[in-house]
Amino acid sequence: MNIRADMKPIFSDKILASGDVYLDEKIVIHNVKVIQADKDGKTYSFVSFPEKLKGDKWEPVVMIKDKDLRKAITDTVNKSVVAQMKVEKEPLDLTVEVRLYEKDETRGYATVNYGGLVKIDGVRIFERDGELRVSYPYEKNGDRYQNIAGPVSPGIRKAMTEMIVKAYQDKKLEQEKDIGDVSEEAPVPDGRSL
Image 1 (tube, one colour):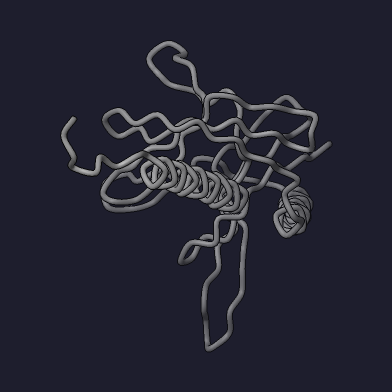
Image 2: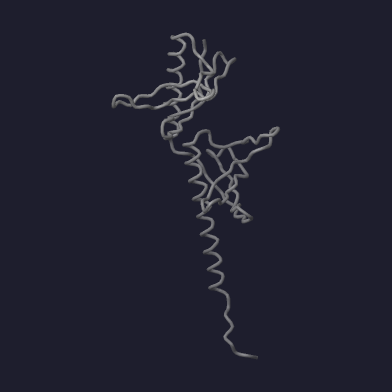
């Protein structure tokens, strides 16, 4: 059986990664997790398949019946996590241009250039609860909204958000400096009458 895993590091309290496992490109198992736990003073991790809460108990939704297949899936999932963690440590080849536009929560829009080859326009910078945030372009698909383009994992999202927010703050400071320079150069009436 051909197994492919698309895992994204999360690094929450107990969940290290979450993603999808594809079997022969015909069956997909969503919400597969790598979970970290402590037992007898030792920390270990394991692959967890989707479960559903029934009453007060969690019951498996997906069961891998074959021990060898389970091991192969676990190995593929772990390799995917390691590969994605390496990608997240690489520097982002990203440039950001910001247009200030203040209306309601919106503070501006950014254009992100990845590697000088791919441009994502319409990245919204907004403020909520005193914190600057970023929203990537999306479209409505039925009754859901779906991102058109953006970061692939929480780690890359964090790095991109930091770069976009910094570009916004730099642009805002530049604008404030320009306004200050203009007001300093403006002629001041000397109070004499004609």
